[in-house]
Length: 339
Image 1 (cartoon, helix red, strand yellow):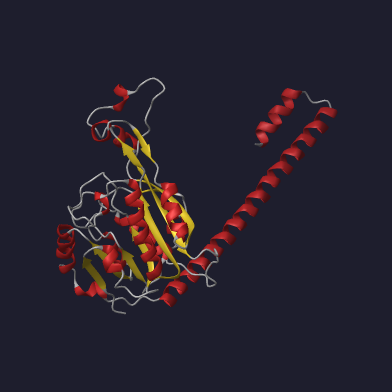
Image 2 (image 1 turned 90 degrees about the vertical axis):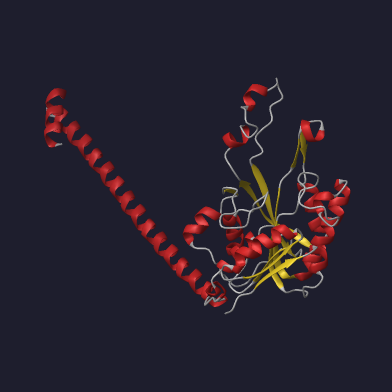
């Protein structure tokens, strides 16, 4: 199977319209934040919106177009954070919650909320000294601000029926599932091996989402592609990739990295059936571990009961010795010698 890495420089809303309907299996993206960073001077850039109303409106247009290109049942994983007001930038402190408004847009666009993940990007200790001095010195009575060291990943499914796939299968091993299944993912906020970007997308985060919500040979799309981390994770895990990035500098930086890839990275011998077969092998291992665990538990239970029976027998013998007139000290010596 020959994989394709489609890397596009342009406005995502315009470029999405060129993608055929129901041709993408998974979308992973992190949209620009309103009024937080200047990514570009382009009027199409969501970060340049004057108000949150304008931001939500333009984001809704992108989400609706993404719904069109997704296959039925396809997933859309969006990473975002609540907006943290600061004295220097906004003149006051506090937070702007984006969760409710973004969830409303998805529901109105034909999606159902499928899963939610809290991404711990770095330790609270690092967050609390990010200004260069301990925040502890600035704590006011009854007015603490908790570290903003996490973000959200909301996974939506196209369609509102909530029906699941009929065929069991996953690209995740038992060992991976033990780590992925938690609703809190502790992943460093670093795009290792990717192009430089002011807000890097963690490769491990992208890889987990790809393995959980797509299959080998599927098409994975990032409509706000930044440094191309989603494209890289998709190709390296046997998926096809489409990335759309508005900022030409970010686009070129990622393209320089893609140009250096060995052509062999695009050749994949994996397949949907291969994934299902691996899943069945892992299931068999799980069942074997389950039986071995059950057997060990039963052996432990039998050993515990044997100990109880022995103790009961000892008490019975001690009672008989007392009946025969032996002193407690003599019985104690007999028990210690027996042990």
